[in-house]
Amino acid sequence: RCLLYLDKVETLTGVSSSTRSTALINAGIMLKNLDRLDEGVSRLQLAVQSDPTSFYAQHGLATLLMTTRDFVAADARFAACLTLMPPEHIAAVRTNHGTCLWKAFLEGAEGFVGRDLLQEAKEHFKVALKQPQKSFDAFAKLL
Image (cartoon, rainbow, N blue to C red; front, top):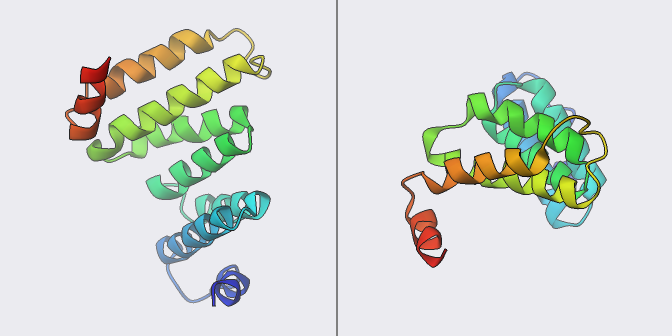
């Protein structure tokens, strides 16, 4: 059934851009879970094109791009998330963005000329740790 869904989702017509984006986000997540990462990225890019204001499309694409080690593109998507994220997702987005920048630094920071990736990552982590979220409060106590 999942594969039938994946075949049909790109050709959705007669629905709102938000509905199409949601369907493409779900397809991207399914493809990621099937370890078909490039196809997942493609669906999530279509989701962002369908609804650029969708936090979930932007964040889903950012995290999958980070998984595929396309840190420059992931950084751009995380940056887009910063203005779209609901308050309850601040800690997760900032943690993921910081992790992306940290991994980019570890891999040589190619494509990030003139940026202090460690300092930027640190700033994201500091914001994340200040958020009043139980899971992060517990994590901060461990530090």
